[in-house]
Amino acid sequence: MNFSATSDLKEIRDLVNKELLNFVAAENKYLNEIASELAPVASAMERFLLDSGKRLRPLFAYIGFLGTGSKPTIEILRACAALELVHVCALMHDDVMDASDTRRGAPAIHRAFEAMHKINKLSGSAEQFGISSAILLGDLALVWSAKMLHQSGIDGNVLLAALPMYDEMRVELMAGQYLDVYEQALASESVERSLKVARYKSGKYTIERPLHFGAALGGANSKLMKSYSDYGLPLGEAFQLRDDVLGIFGNPEETGKPAGDDLREGKRTVLLAKTMELSDAKSKAAINSALGNPNLTLAQVEEVRAIIVETGAISEVEDLITSLTSSAQSALEHGEIEPLAKSALTQLLTIVTVRKL
Image (cartoon, rainbow, N blue to C red):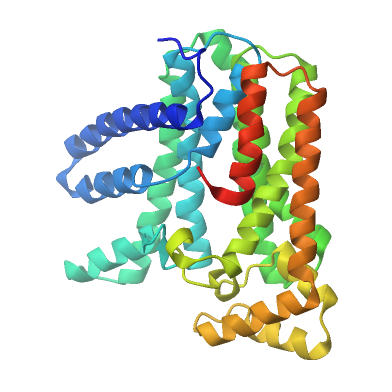
C-alpha cells in the first residue's frame, strides 16, 4: 500500500485508527484467553484508545517520515501508530497522579475500576483497586506500544535506526512527568521551571521526538533532524501552553474535564507562574487558596480566572504561544523538508495551538 500521494491529516489519522483497532483486537483476544477476569481490562483498553484522540504523535511521526522523501508503506504507518500507545500510558498514569475523576468526558480509568470494585462488592479498598488497575493498564499500554512497533513488519535495520528516538521519547516523557509532580510538591512559582516541565512533559514527546522517530525510519540526515528540532521544540512548548490555558479556561464539553480542573489538581503551569509573578499579595493569597483544593467551586474558579485576566498573564501567555508558533513556522522555511511534509507541518501549526482537527 502506497501513501505517498497524500498528506491529508484526516486520511492518515483514519489509517492510524484502523491499525490500532486491528492491533488491539488481536491483543484483547489474547487477554481473554489468559483469563475471563481480564475482560474488563480488554474492554477498558479498547474503549480508552479508540473512543477519541487526535493521534498527534503518530501524525508527527508519519509526517516526519514523509519529510525524508522516502516511500511510505503500511509497515511504516503501523510503526508510527505504535506511538499512540505511549500516549495512552501517559494519560492513564497522569490521571492517577493528578487524582482526576474524568478523561475525555468519561470516568478516568482508576475511577472506572474503583466503581467496578464497588458494583461487584469485592473485598478491600475500592480506591486502591482502581489505582492499582490504572497503573497496570498504563504499563500494558507501554508494553503494547513496543510490541506494535516490533511487530510492525519494518526492516530490522530500520527498526534499529529508530529505536534510539523511541527510547529517548519514553525517557523524556517520564522525566517530564516526575518534574511536574515535583514542581507541585515544591509549590514552584518559577516561569522558567514551569517552561522546562512543559518542554519535557508534553512538548518533546508530542512533537520533536515523534518527528525524529519518523525521520529515523526514513533514514534522515543530521540536518533534517535539526530542522525538526527547530520546528518541534517551540511548537511543543506552544502546545503545552495552550493546554495550560484550556486547563483553566477550557469548555468542559470540549476538554472532557471539569472547568478549572488544573486548579483543583494544583498544577504549577506557566500560566499560573506568570500570574503569580504579576499579582499583588491579595491575589496571590486567593490563588494559593484555590490551588490543590479538590472542592473548588465554579465561582472560585471564576475568581482565579478574573485574576489571570486582570494581571495580563493570559495575554502574555497568548503572546508567547504566538511567538513560539512563529519560530516553528520559520524553521519550515529554512529546513530541507520535502514539500508534501512541509504542507502538513504547516497545517499542524494551527492544529496543535488551536486544537482543531
